[in-house]
Amino acid sequence: MALPKPHEGLVVRYGYLWEWQRRQGQEEGKDRPCMILRLYQTPDMPAPRAIVLPITHAPPDPGLGQEGIEIPATTARRLGLDDERSWLMVSECNLFRWPGPDVRPVDATRNAYGPIPPSLYGRARDRFVERAGQRRVTAVTRSE
Image (cartoon, rainbow, N blue to C red; front, side):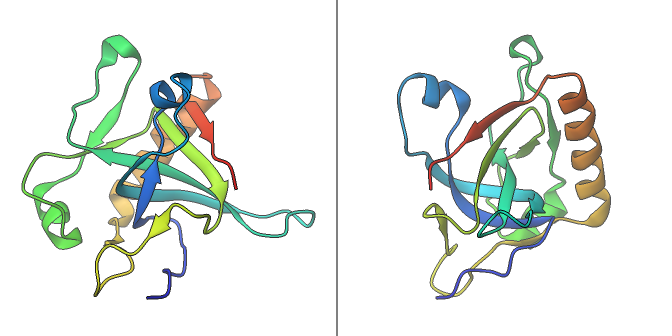
């Protein structure tokens, strides 16, 4: 199955590597839903780069500097996520060359979960940008 055409706000299945995993020397992450926050390319880049935010069942821990936005149940159902509460984390991201080896189809019939509603995307983007401006975002650059 062909990989999805990337766009900001699209939720894809991606092998996300948390910062704590990288510190432990891991190079492979767990496949999970991740939202494409930003795609960018400069003339010297052979392929676009993506910034993705992870979606997790673990609530953010402010004591660890984590922040997330809870995904409404209706959005989670539309995306085909399970019934557990989920958060879109805005305090951490992965950066990689699109599509990279860690973007995978969701299942045999879908190459992506679908788009996040524009209002949720805007909230996540704005919080991420604000935190990044305060140097409170952890970014893991993935190998090609």
